[in-house]
Amino acid sequence: MLRPMADVNTETAAEPRWEVFLNGAFVAPERATVSVFDAGFQHAVGVFATVSVYGGVAFRLREHLELMAASAVQLGLAREMSVEPLAEAVRATITHNGLAGLERARIRVTVTPGAVSMLREKRGESGDRRVGQTVCIVPEPAVAYDPAYFDDGITALFYKQSANPFDDLAGHKTLAYWGRLRSLRQAAAMEAGEALWLSVTNHVTCGAISNVILVKDGQLVTPLARGETESDALPAPVRPGVTRAAVLELAETAGLTVTKKLVSVDEVLDADEVMLTNSGWGVLPVSRMEQKVIGDGKAGPVTRGLRTALLGLIERECSAEADA
Image (cartoon, rainbow, N blue to C red; front, side):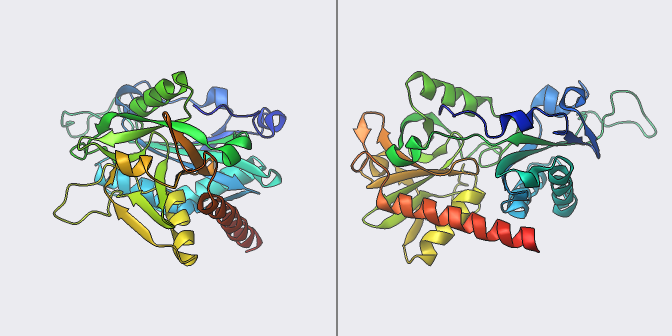
């Protein structure tokens, strides 16, 4: 895993006012508990989103929550999930904890169905084990990554064929995250910062915690994500990240061609530039894939340009929302 620098505003983050929103109330982190019968605890049933906050404004909050809600409905966690109450709860969490006074922070939103039984409950049945839906919103200090990563790039490695298009959970951000964390741990053991997952067809899909974008001959190529395949094709086991979408928008605005397709290992190794996107680090260059140097071994011009453009977009959108 990438070695972060000291957390931003560590002293502020330790103050008691950083409270967790749990099922409609703010509580101190040590008092934020869920039932042992909650399906999130028992079976990793649940969805989550991680959102970056800039000056008290969550960047593209609605897009993050809409992705999470769509996953919850598609996977059967809920018949429907309204985004606006969740967005209001996130904004209330930011206000309650005074995050507007910080340059950066992050918010994690987690939703579980509560207790889940495979047996039909009898009419009128009740008991201690019947636990309602859990909604938890946790504010945290942002992680400050070493600036050298964004100039020199990081090393990534290929991970075994684990992204399965036949897996209903693939392409969704669920609490069943141990496989991804395990691949990150293995990458860290080899002094790499990210693991690029291969599909069962041996195509590159995404990073353990990021989306992948390649640059070849001035054009961008990115693996197909959920919802981007043809109707008669296998579904893509890749989550369509919010930051990825923003970066692709910026690329197209700049006149760059963007292609979404199946991506081979050789295409990654032969790319002029490789970048990773997520809400935490934004745009992160990859300068080496295992033993293979990418480009000139530094952040390439397209990657640098898109990182600068993304930071500008974040500043504009968050400033506009703060002034609204």
